[in-house]
Image (tube, rainbow, N blue to C red; front, side, top):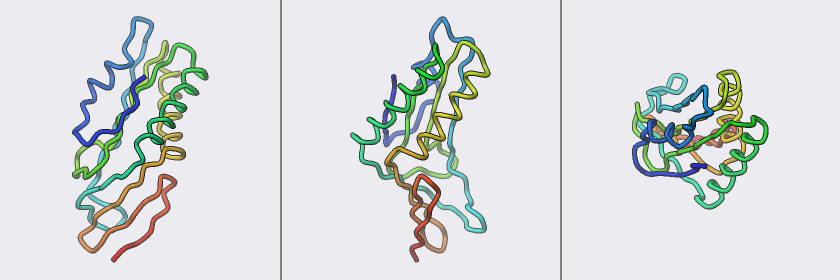
Length: 143
């Protein structure tokens, strides 16, 4: 199972290749991409920090839970750390499964669990300041 943090651009095809196998009837790829706004604020860039050993261990736990819950499914995670420009992917998750419905369910489970459980922190940089965001969506404003 692929579960990695990277300071490099994410190659979605490589993430998909990590879950491809002959029993896969569906491969679904989710990309979380940096957008240029948050509410009324213009976003200049994102910056991610993580504790790599803890983050990777939790991604592997989520993957094991997913594969147990959806037999025949496989999952791969790549999450960026460091600066992520507008338009670049912050996270890529690929899920393969025997059938498309399972792939959609498993993919939603994967991103929801990542956001809830994995120790990765995001700082949004705006034209008028910045804000740290916890995975659960909490924010701490900085001037």
